Length: 416
Image (cartoon, rainbow, N blue to C red; front, side, top):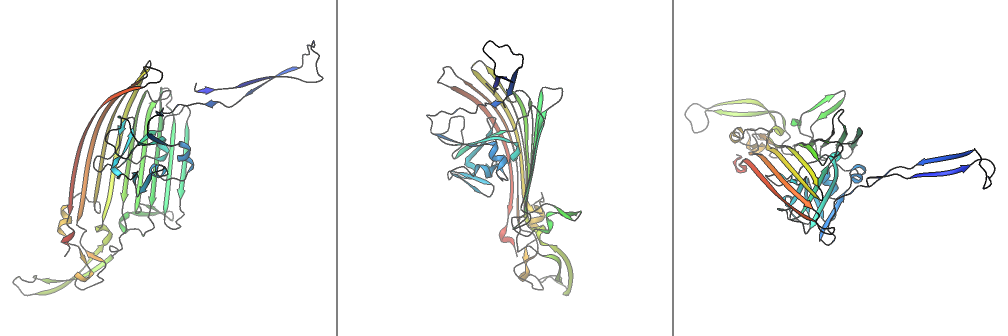
């Protein structure tokens, strides 16, 4: 029973009390309608199993001042959040499995979990201990994410958190919109989130901030932009749904050694020592903005998941298919070509002519470049049935295909 409604009928009389044989016409019927009580069923766990289940409720995600789903899961026992990586019961970051609709969501390169907008999460569960056979390939635990479903009526929500630039600049903004599509049996649900933070450090000149109406907008030292969209049957989202998750993260950490943003006087000798010719001294001014030559990191990710669930008596069959694409680059100025980095050596002040402050860099790039691309295709078919009232029988089959490319160049000893 999904809805229950109690209706109270009361008979009252006005005026003087009536005798048992009275048929006074001034009787009045009072009808009161109480609010509906909604009863929803969640996952049924085996009480005899040693699996521990910790639930992150929608109320906790909406009321607590949380900036990410990872922060909400970190409030559970046995979970530690280091940066953006979750460590469950002492496990490494890649040993925790993220799933939705029975499909895994970890990055194929490093095993990192996805970034899901807070308003896109309907419910999240952390499973630890002895796990069932449906969760292979995990050692620390499983994070099962259930995304937002379309609603019968249009709904919307918006939230903004800010530090007011006290102790650092931090701004978080998120919202969601859900409702039915007119004249169709489908409904929609969309959510977006952005998180900008300077991490309590000065900003870099290359992060691209612009002034508009006296305010400054643009990237900070740590930036996260997330999106979510879902199309499903309005009355039964589990029967058929297609959803998309996307994220873009730009990290431009501050380094006090790369703060020069000025013209640099350089003395040159022509021809160089060791070559024939009359030596001629010369000088030139070169503009050097050091933070353009310091590595930045940009990562993008897209996940598309389609699933359909059908019931045949006491048997439920679910078919799910997914496609994931992720890319990341770490390089000076977010360049996608590593060859220019190889040619310009990094120099500090004591290696220049004339000599300057030995702490700051005045020429060259940090010789580091790393770029990855990954794609994953998944297909899963699962079935559960109840042959007897106190028994549950389940099984499934899955197929996963991954392609990973990685290119890295690191020559930290090349600086002259």
